[in-house]
Length: 261
Image (cartoon, rainbow, N blue to C red; front, side, top):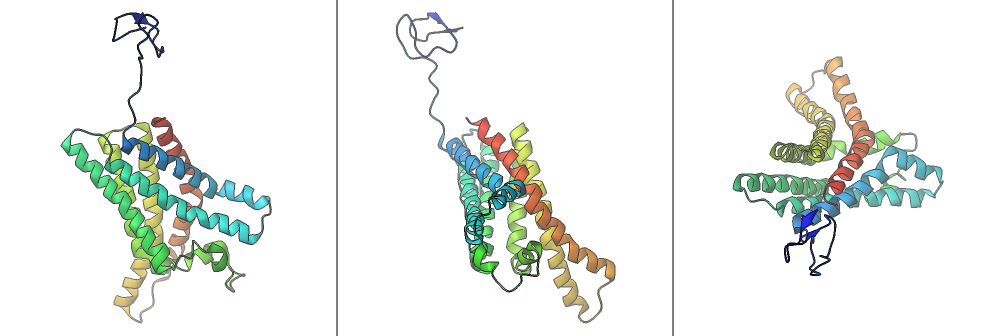
């Protein structure tokens, strides 16, 4: 039960109008723009992660669409997450908070998320000339004997720095958000950000270390153990990005979307 603010009549808790005076009660205030942006971004990223997950890609491939339709559909998904994270960054920038200290952390998180978007734009559109956005044409190159991991790993040596910076930025944003409020949805987002950061480090750092080692050692032979780590580590990171991250992302953004419904 609750009390009407106009006539003090006792009314049902979920009633929208007072039966005595007709006053409108229990009206929810309009959502803050930041919360609305986070909700829209979460929905976009939820759909994107669901569709790009291995189970979804497998089901879609079983429908036997043409190669052009299939790869064009997958390519579109590499644009969608850019939009989603951009809205998420602006959402946390406008998140309603009164404490100056927490406001600074939210702004820092927003900057880190937008930095991920910038880094993504640099390596997708500038460095690789948007090969992900033109996945069908990229896969038509004469490398049919190579697997998908080899095809996707070809540009990794070029994108290692923006990929690493973006992954670290997103991971830090997720950690900062959780430290402000240790809620379940933020814990999921932190797990998503940290595991993504680990995957990116597994992909990028061995390539960077190998380049530095080769530069310092010049013509000396790299030890076999180090070579094995440097070669196979990026594939482990790539598998995390292709299999674990989409499923974890779908769960994370579903929970984040539900929070603000």
